[in-house]
Length: 443
Ligand code: ATP
Ligand code: MG
Image (cartoon, rainbow, N blue to C red):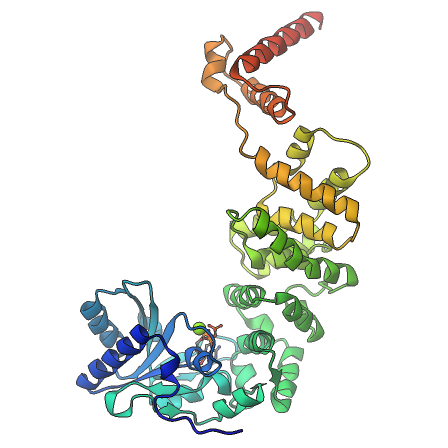
């Protein structure tokens, strides 16, 4: 079923405006005496007829100077990364375009970032991760649409195969281990036999341990940000890669069940609370660590150099969630305000984890009850007391820690439906103060 690609076939799948822009940039490159190419993932996605968002271009010439020229001509935003000879353009309509100088990379030491030098497009393609990502399409007018595919990327795309370009690839850059899994799972491809052997080999060494925290974090979170991370996580476990997060991290049956329940919980959550923006990768990470001890979770947080915000979510995972879940779905009745207090410190991510844990218990009644409680909780979050600290002061109350207690009581009474109006709040405060006074006098 092999079919030679006619020159302009591939680019025809682009939107008309994008196509015109690429033509214009090809002309501009010609005027500067340089060859310009569309390259990498975007070419792969065009061949797979997937939707294209950002454009990756590479130029045999001075990438940064060319990016400046384009930015001036189109009034696009420009960010320059001198060290990698790349620039990012943001066009007025929001289109993002990465522009790089074609380059050669050398790895002084495995797992560290390479040093880069300008080189030909052929050399630039030869440093890439997989054949399917090593295809370029020329944009200069006399060769517009010419496909450069020296490693058989189109053949492998047709055969649904992920293949490295050389035997030392994973050794040079172990992030490619995670990238291989990402593309394999995203496209439903398989690893070519030798590639699979090389990957298993590289995964069995300690190469990944040499990756810096931010680089490992990037790979893990990208994997967890995929459309269906559940299979990717299972694949990490199968390839014994979870040990690079922590040597004691296991993909037990329980953990698998929680992870598998996350997509369902996310769907329900998004439908119910469309305004809540969930950090999905973090929820999956929380699920993965849901049976780990706090010490293991803390160690994973350090290894991945997670931000303070992310760390807060992840470390909240275990003990609180289990306790809250027991009380919220238990036989004992609890007041709405008690349910609210149980969850008050939970982030939305932690609430989704809570739900996932209940989803995988497959107890119909408990799940319905919990969902109801979550809906009530999200509503209760918007409940406010009419009185403020200033009002309490006006009522003759000395400012102090008591304010927090009184306002908390008011909020609870509102949530429980015992107070509706401001007048009732005032009565409540006076009564409460009276009781306090009596109590103090009896002491
Ligand atoms: P995605 O759709 O996930 O963005 P992508 O293939 O575009 O996939 P990017 O990380 O955006 O991946 O990188 C763009 C291109 O740069 C890749 O297609 C590949 O050619 C090259 N590349 C990226 N990372 C590596 C790497 N670690 N080693 C070699 N080449 C890489
Ligand atoms: Mg990309």
